Image (cartoon, rainbow, N blue to C red; front, side, top):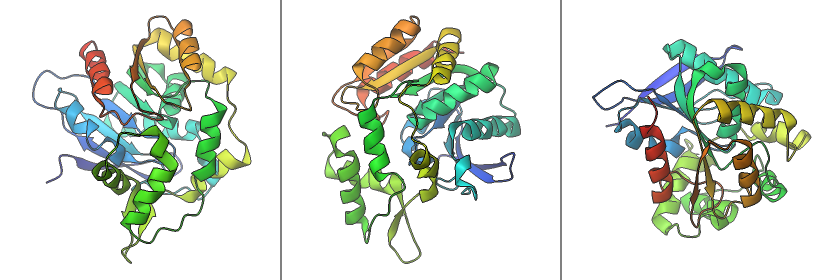
Amino acid sequence: MADFVERRWRSADGLSLHARDYAAAAGEARLPVICIHGLTRNARDFEAVAPWVAAQGRRVLAVDIRGRGRSDPDPDPMNYKPLTYARDMLAMMDSLGIARAVFVGTSMGGLITLMVAGLRLRAIGGAVLNDVGPEVAQEGLDRIAAYAGKPVDIRNWDDAVAYLTRTMGPAFPDLDEARWHALARRSFVEGSDGVPRLDYDPAIARPFSSKPPPRQSYIAGLLFRRLARRRPTLLLRGELSDLLSAEIAARMRRAAPTMHYAEVPHVGHAPLLEEPAARAAIEAFLAKLP
């Protein structure tokens, strides 16, 4: 039996969007948590994290960003951008009557969180930025651009696992075969023909390829400082990350001296948030929030 219920809401432009809603454990009411995945990912990335957070007394919403998972694809691929996604998150909050939440954003999900801070800072009670910031390393951008939205020949689940180990293997050198198979089930869905397919609209990469994002953005820097200086913020970095280098993380910490920080050992971009170091940092961070 699922430990969540399905939620749907409409975006401003009429798309039907989806989230998994995990009920908080009994006890004193606390701020809910909104979990936002990365570029080619979906809500299933949080299938282990969300129940763990809910057990700490917080309602958790793990979203499928438009074009991923069970959310509608966008007929206009140029809408696949963080500003659109941030507006979708606020529409979800409004539809569910949530005034304020703690945001947990992995990679692109962290950039969406920065956009939410720019649109409606009062909606954010705290934020976890998972291996992302207003500046990113070119090496990581190039790696993501090499596979996101590209055609892939997948015939069975073994092929799906092989694809993930090719594209993500260096980031997770310690994952065993069982964990790779579990990650494949989060990344692919089985079609009516029994063949797995990546669980996102390939067109999500169109804006990325037509106009590659800058390594550093002045606006993103302003949004980061707005968030991290005015709201409790935790930055997580994978020790092996090729997107958020140690130097970039150091600059972020200098720009926001009160920001919490933790490094997840022997993991690259982006930590799964199931690692002991990541969980310890998140648990300590959430314990300080209402």
